[in-house]
Length: 348
Image: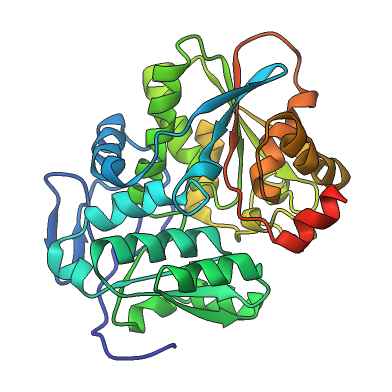
């Protein structure tokens, strides 16, 4: 427990997977009370409805960039590294925060993150004029910790296992702020779905999209949008072989233990049963990038596309060489918050 000064809220379970997320707001028509979201039909582990994605994208639009597409050999790069905090995460956090009742938002925001969600939450809170605290790995890159401070939020550093325990035990329920789950919150996923809408508008003949996968919120949102409008688009999830959590879990049919050994620190989120169901339903194919290849992809991006990407951000680009050539393809560069010392080493 970080601090105890708020009443405990009653949390409703997902009707399919039994998970108990904390939701402060839902789509139009859902009733909010002090006991939380009253929405018996809510199923977190299903594909997000296109109406919900459009509403979330509309809420967030004022605060996020419509990022450009840059051509490289055989594909287009979607540069989410150019968002205000250097990653796609601002889409989901603004969508979630602006979907809260005013009294819920006024309590401030709290989240848990390896770094990019922390910065997005801090930036959204500062923009909306509320307080923010973020629970982070004590091994988070210094650039991400400093980014949180720069946006006026308070980072709370914990060892990885302690942080995962705080998340699994719903430690946020004893905190005064309103919690936004960094990847399993439906409004966060819906906000990320706005990226999928942009892809369909900007690449009318889109055939494939490669997405780096950590907790699954980004690919879940993109896939939900694409499958609703153009179901023939292939959605490809990408992970490093240094933390191939989802490919191993899907092969095993359930959770497995994987120790992170990757520079893609933004993809080291833990297993989540809700996201497991969503990813089973909406991801068409998975690719695994060898860690040595990921290390070469970062300087390649810098040289060929003049793009600075962090480990997670370079995954989709690194996986392009595994695809058969041909149809119009987009690789999402999810973030650019790389530690300067690591970048210098890789460029060296």
